[in-house]
Length: 65
Image (cartoon, rainbow, N blue to C red; front, side, top):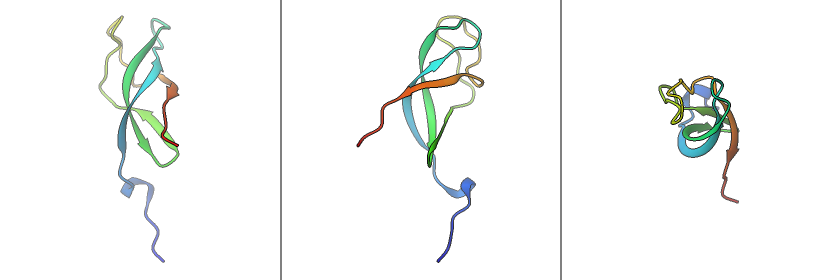
């Protein structure tokens, strides 16, 4: 039995609601889902204040059942 390292698991992109750390609003952003973890895709900007969403918190991600 072979195990894959975390970096070898392919990341799937999905849309989610993210909390902007600067303007404290929720905006839509693309997230990378890898296993049970989801991260904001690097390099995205907030639609309201143009701040970086790299440090943003994921609020809601719709998963298929």
